[in-house]
Length: 172
Image 1 (cartoon, rainbow, N blue to C red):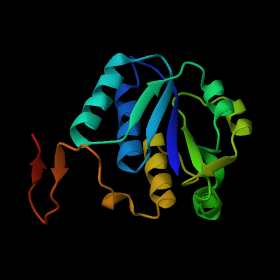
Image 2: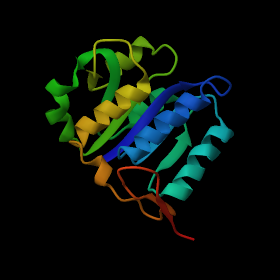
Image 3: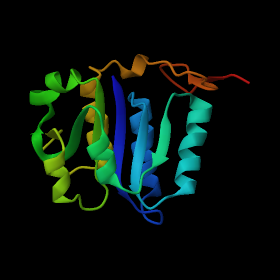
Image 4: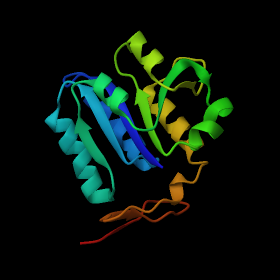
């Protein structure tokens, strides 16, 4: 399954940290890439691409000014993560059957049009929370908790799990 995350409404001066966290979660939990709309932000792209270069991929980040085009041209299922959607536990089995999946997460206020253009509006909880949390929980459900075992191509750094302390192995 190809999984792409669409981050709506990135604001360069205001959102680089939260958008970076969205990209990190998307990558670490098994997405193949992320598209972000709103303002183009080279610093954000450089930051994410440097992580992919060091920690491995595949993971592609790109900017698309027109989020509508991304949604309407998508060949596969689309999921919008929102507190107003159906509980993830009730819909995840059907969503897992998709060949390609576009996961849409908001930034600033999400236009009502998004709710009507997607195949599924999905909630991970009916309480206010961040798009980072929603994405992590949804992807954990999507991949049935198997994402920690994933290996990354071309990784220069790898964490060695241990009870105490921190250990990494680096390739030169």
